[in-house]
Length: 239
Ligand code: ATP
Image (cartoon, rainbow, N blue to C red; front, side, top):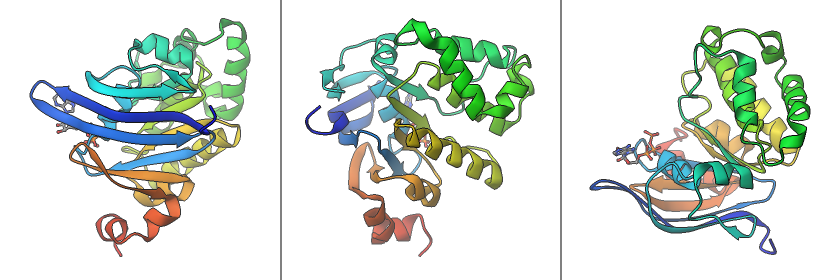
């Protein structure tokens, strides 16, 4: 689109019964960027990602993706438009093999033709998954499961990947590896909206970010602006 934004969200509201989780969220994600969503537990970050892919009860708001209004679409239609979520907690099926997970991800592909090609690309990018193709996912380490969750999402060939807390529960070296992989995916032209508790690392790889509190965006800026802001330094970076 002419704005250069791959994603434009305005007035997004989500409620779970009486709980108003999002009270009107506006944000944009530029093509090829990594944009990070920061904020305390319960601020509404996961609800934002889930609502974007049609998984949370959206009450109001407009979601424009690649110039098209996708506000009313079902999750599987949104995936076919090119937006995919790697959910918080990875949602791996312990008794399915690594390859079965990749095939599941590929089932939602935009253009069914080149699934084999995408699979080869993923196995090259995540060599540990290639070694473990026939293994049940329940036997993988936490970091390997996170890689599998990302690779599964990538099997739909998204233009925009929504990543919810990829570092959750992982050792620091493993987190570094996952972040390197995320940065590598962006280098290939993927656009990423990243929810992360690890503020320092996510500002390192992000171009821009939003800080949420109580269902609203309370601060927005480039990664450098956020890193230097007194709010971020006080609340997250221990300065
Ligand atoms: P976290 O990092 O803990 O996931 P978050 O910023 O992602 O936090 P959300 O998970 O989006 O925040 O939660 C926003 C608000 O909505 C919180 O008050 C939460 O308790 C509430 N909430 C989230 N999911 C549900 C649900 N399924 N049912 C009821 N309330 C929910």
